[in-house]
Amino acid sequence: MSTRPVETHGYRMNHTMLRIKDPKPSLHFYQEVLGMDLIATSNNSDFTLYFLAYDHTNGKATQEEKQGQRFLREGIVELTHNHGTESDASFIGYHNGNKDPRGFGHIAITVPDVQAACDRFEKLGVQFQKKLTDGRMRHIAFILDPDGYWVEVLPNGFNSDP
Amino acid sequence: MSTRPVETHGYRMNHTMLRIKDPKPSLHFYQEVLGMDLIATSNNSDFTLYFLAYDHTNGKATQEEKQGQRFLREGIVELTHNHGTESDASFIGYHNGNKDPRGFGHIAITVPDVQAACDRFEKLGVQFQKKLTDGRMRHIAFILDPDGYWVEVLPNGFNSDP
Image 1: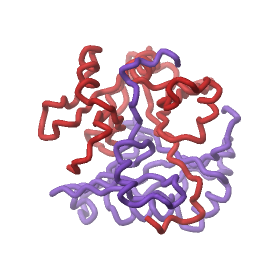
Image 2: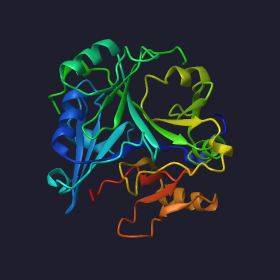
Image 3: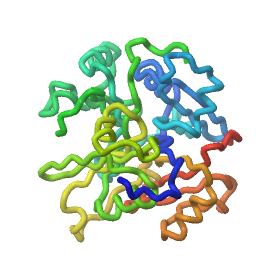
Image 4: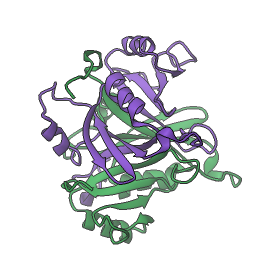
């Protein structure tokens, strides 16, 4: 839109925050399965924040450079771990927003080859909400992160508007 | 992390999806208040998807170029409008994830001047969850979108790790 208010120049969509029960499986999922970098960690007395994002520098960025981009770049996922939930047997888990009461739906990653990505996710034991072969949308899958949040997986060359 | 799996090269954190009750106030908020562009719209029989993102080309990108980035770029917000909620008196609204059952917390924008941004939001009648002067974190505010989702506002030069 050409109507963008001039006062908003320089604004960026920095991050999306999700609460997690246990950082161990979540960091494994976002780093080892999805391939994001842990660009910063913020330790607090009763909670820890983990900031994850994709490195688009082909591995050239140093950890300091990545951390320096924490408030400048887009596409960051912030995972909030309230200490204790990981070992609290009475903790019922977090709400993924896709059953009542609904609200937040999902985050989405785009990938060069959605079939190869989903084949790899299956080999790694990732849970699927929707496989490529389920339903009408054969180019889109939904996988579940360790807390049950939906992660849409779609091809970065997808251009047939549904 | 240097351990990024090679199979994930080219992955991007494309978007975050939130359900909205009524596109009119939501599009006004994300475009006119936050300054995002509507880069694509997907019309379906019973729902419509609105894809919004910041233009970082200083107004040079055409609408076609913006739409072409829909599956390639990061920092997109997808708003899902299930038709009818905007005029359904029995619709109780969407859940913002910050009271039980909790899960999703917020999206966040970074801005060059957080004080100026918040002053402008106040003049525009935006609701605040946390003003800059509330609480300990004087560099961070939280505003509410029309559905009550929290939008964190923080300076892009913020580097004192909380």
